[in-house]
Image 1 (spheres, rainbow, N blue to C red):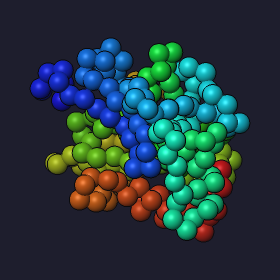
Image 2: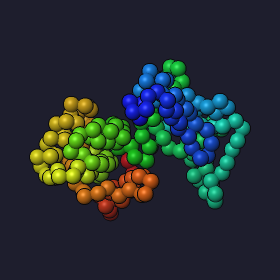
Image 3: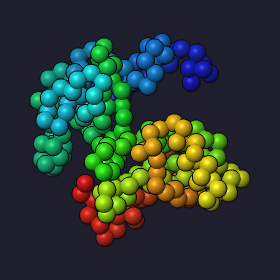
Image 4: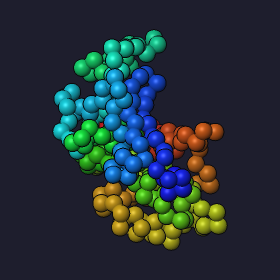
Amino acid sequence: MIDWWGPVVTEYYAASEGGGTAITAREWLARPGSVGKAWLGTEVRVLDAEGNDAPAGETGLVYMRMGASTFDYHKDEEKTRASRARGMFTVGDIGYLDADGYLYLCDRKSDMIISGGVNVYPAEIEAELSGHPAVADVAVFGIPHDDWGEEIKAVVQPAAGVAPGPALTAELLDYLGQRVARFKLPRTIDYIAELPRDPNGKLYKRRLRDPYWSGRARAI
């Protein structure tokens, strides 16, 4: 969009529960990938598993608070409690802050893959695979592995006129292997005519993931 229109775009990250960040195009060009700094009157922090502030550059759950406002999830006390820490709330996004307080998002906690004790963020793999001209759409998620807990699976919608199969899989893995660490490579790639998305473009990743977990407890 910046290449198309010039540095006139403002991006924001927010939750309907309240709070968020914003970044101008010129700021983004200096910090590619950031979603900006907290709005005026909003607090944004990244906390580790113990609820402490994560050091700059280290990932954790993103928590927010807008002024003194508060809320409860309707008839769901457990969800309300689970989303709170130090008077702030999280919607389950993982990210990190840089030394200047700019926020970078990695993925959703619910989508994170834990393979052999290592955290893998599908969004990074999806972003790289989507850059290949043979890929029209892609989803990456974890499926059961008896020894590692989860292994990485990619489901690809080939571009028009592209034939799925072993040759394409080899090409995609070679392409991806030049862009991400080896432990982030999918073990297997499946192909589908069209990924399930709603009219707004939101991916129904659970529809793809759930059949692989049929009869298995997803407790990683």
